[in-house]
Amino acid sequence: MKSIRFGKLEDGRSAGLYILESPDGMRAAVTDYGAALVSLAVPDRKGNMRDVVLGHDDASGYENGSGHIGASVGRFANRIAGASFELDGHTYELTANNGMNCLHGGRDFFRNRLWSVKIDFTSVKSNAIMAAYASESIADKDPSRGLRGLNDNMITFCLDSPDGDQGFPGNMHIEVTYSLPGNGRLRIDYSAVSDADTPVSFTNHSYFNLNGHDSGTVMGHMARFNAEYYSPVDAGLIPLEEPAPVEGSPFDFREDKMLGRDINADNEQLSFGGGYDHNFIIGDSANEEGERSIREAGILYSNDSGICMTVLTDMPDMQVYTANGLKDEPGKDGAVYGRRGAVCLETQFRPNAINSGDPGIREGCILKAGEEFTSSTIYRFSNI
Image (cartoon, rainbow, N blue to C red; front, side):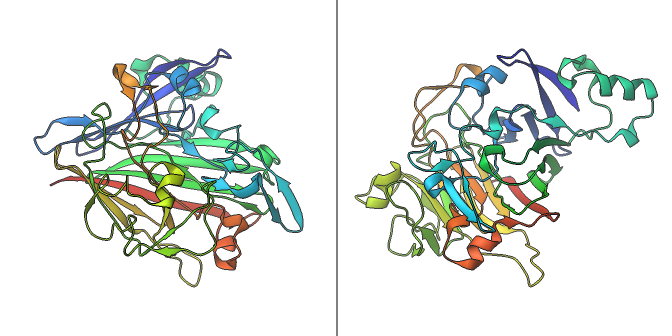
């Protein structure tokens, strides 16, 4: 694996960029700042590589940027109504950063933290090398040395979140693993352990444009989502208690449909978010033992580039966000990202699940003390 310096933060700390390569030629770059996906190069139908995710040139771009571009999001992705919840007889107050609601954990985002890189020292032979890695910042190493002890196609970022962090209970250890296992796949695995009961919902906030990150609107992309129902929202984008059928609405993507076909329809739901910013209900895949299985959540493809992306996940829901809030956002390689220049497909638990009146939805997002939470999402690329 190659590692390069990714600039310094305002407090002087260095960030690193890590280049993953798959057996079939895909390349991804991820940074320890926010455990974010910075770039993802996949082949189009002519064999040319296109970077299909929005990003920034260096750590300062992420530190000062908006939109959670490429970030690992937690402790609880999406919105929690009233920035509070009750658990085990106690009311927990969070930070209201989206009107009266808490969005993506509040103001102290995981995306603005420097994560550590997990290294398997069992594969590092030299004691001198082990000592060097233990005593130095990864980001300050000679980039030509690479990262011994790590696979070329996999990296794990770690974060320790103390009790009370963002207002949530429990000391929590979190790991996010990016891997390129081949066959056109980018895989993201999450794990977490807490010493107190706490709600969790992690996701990746990458913005996808299958024509290339700097190619403008995605309204011509085609999409299909495996969802019979979606979550209608109030004016604050908090899901209403009852889901609604997609049939007969602009939210019907059960068959291939252009993202922009109905986005400007005269529809109250679309007016609340300025476009799609809604949860699509894929369905709970958990068995009687609570084990979830990975299945297809949806497909996105571009007839221009010929790139097709299939989203597979073991999570029950997926937020579809058409970048309605992006405006003149400075991006990598001199790009400027604008409204609807990408789409986010964020696998997750239901927004505001911890406050749901449905016991199944509420209990599903609660991590019990001492137990391990795991989830996996795969973005699989092919050509059409």
